[in-house]
Structure formats: C-alpha cells, structure tokens
Image 1: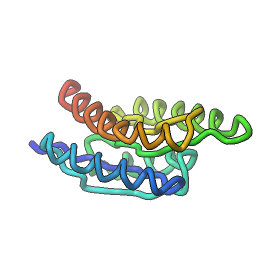
Image 2 (image 1 turned 180 degrees about the vertical axis):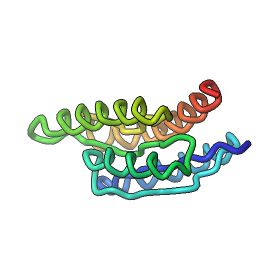
Image 3 (image 1 turned 180 degrees about the horizontal axis):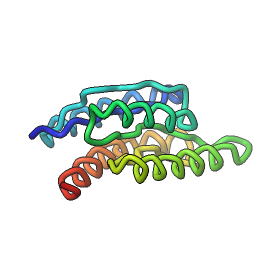
Length: 135
C-alpha cells in the first residue's frame, strides 16, 4: 500500500519554501510515498484551516507542513510558530492522523533558514514513519 501524503505549503518566504517543497517531494518519492494533494496558504499561521480541510476530506494518510518563519524586529515570528504548532498538534489528535511539523523557525535569519531546508525532508520521514507505526 502506497502512503498518500498531503502537503500544506506556506507561500511566505517562498524562495525558501519552494526549495523545501522540492526536497520533500523527492524524499517522499524516495521513500515510496505519493504526494496526492498540495494546498498553498499565505503563511504558517494559515495552515491549520487547510490541514483541517485535507483531513476532513480523508484522501490522505498524513499531512506534511512546509513553512519558514524568519525572525523580525518583534516577537511576531515566535507567536506565529507557537500558535500554528499547537493547532497542528490538536488537528493530528482530533483526526487520528499524523500531521508533521516542517516549519523552520522561529528566531532564525534568512541564511539560517537556507541551512534548514532539510526540515521538510525530516517532516516527510516523520509522517511516513507515523503512518507505518500506527498501522
């Protein structure tokens, strides 16, 4: 059985999330999974609603989030990631399906974000392992 993944990808910092998405797709293919849906949202904060819709539709075994939150002059980046991550966990528990966290940040520079593009690969691997282990 091929594991079906849905991707929820943030458009904010698209130069970085695009590279993350490509790595995630390649890694999913390498691991024998199929990306059957991709949903693009403005930013990481907008992910929970898209994740919920994808889980409600029931066409995927797991959802992989892909985003990048770079540090700004305020603590906005911390608030965005904290609240998005909390809701992502809640949705995973509510629908009994893995939703992996492939959002890099907060508190990083653009250079550090480029160095963390592989977070997307880790998120794919986590989603696949959880589907396999949950049966």
